[in-house]
Image (cartoon, rainbow, N blue to C red; front, side, top):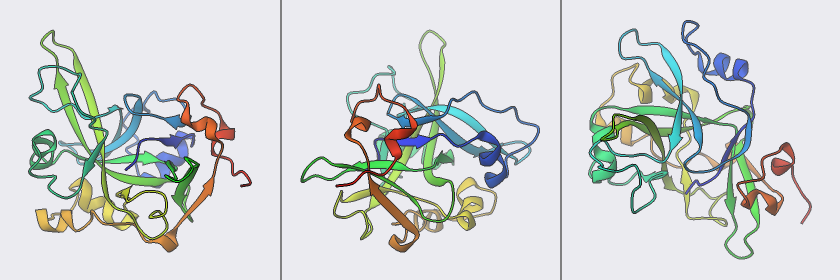
Length: 226
């Protein structure tokens, strides 16, 4: 699963690495070392008219278009890859092609045996880009909320000692297909929803303070000795 992430990276770095449009305004998002569900995530999608990559701030935890309330009885910050086109909560976004890149520079997972948190990231790049779906929900009162979810898959060998699930991490070569910049069948898109190679990732133990969402500082992601 993925229930905590971080993104303190400067937006100029994000813009360059993801090839974001110069004409789109920079989103108003603050650096964070401890992003939790219901908080803001930075997401990138393909503009439906000009095809440019644009960034949006979205609330983490997808609200399906048909929901009568923004408060659901179950968590939606993760969406399992298996059956994603069949589950009522996510199939609308999937079938409509509302796919996005969720921008992080790492995420956290807890070891079950002793609840020790670890920070996890790609090994040779400042960003760890995840596969996501997004949705626009409109309340009965007319309020509009843009939300997102992170797609998860089976854990790779590196993460398996911590948890049996992990977020789907996308390599740069797969971004165009996921965003719809190049044609892809459902089968080809689902083939992207696989574990990221262990040898291209790293993890390290961090302070247990990360378990409290009120804590948000750079020291949270620094390695500690065990």
